[in-house]
Length: 128
Image 1: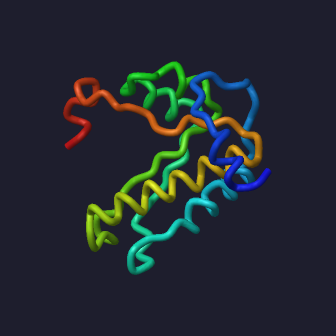
Image 2: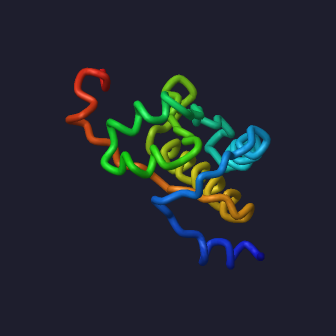
Image 3: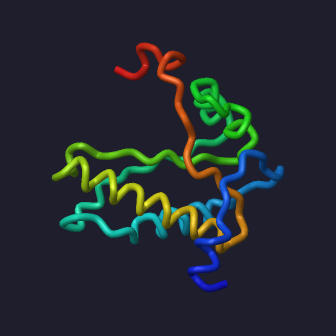
């Protein structure tokens, strides 16, 4: 499939097949993310891959908890403020990073959920 077709056909899903995502596939997803452009090539993103109980605990703090609980793994993407030179530009770079992950996932016919909405009231003091 060519890149324009990938872009046009990518969708965000909230229900997942009960299949394991191999560690090698996760490594390739993260590699696709790291190839995103960033100002000064500072690559301000950091990742955390959660599965099992950690993933399910995270789910309790989201609006779409059923989607996270239904996924085999989740990849959290963070802005590393120490690596940041311009918050606005770095957030755009992180958007490109996430888009790279989603397009790679789609190209491999894996499932994805583009972004998750966190509920600050549920997080409480954990946000500090």
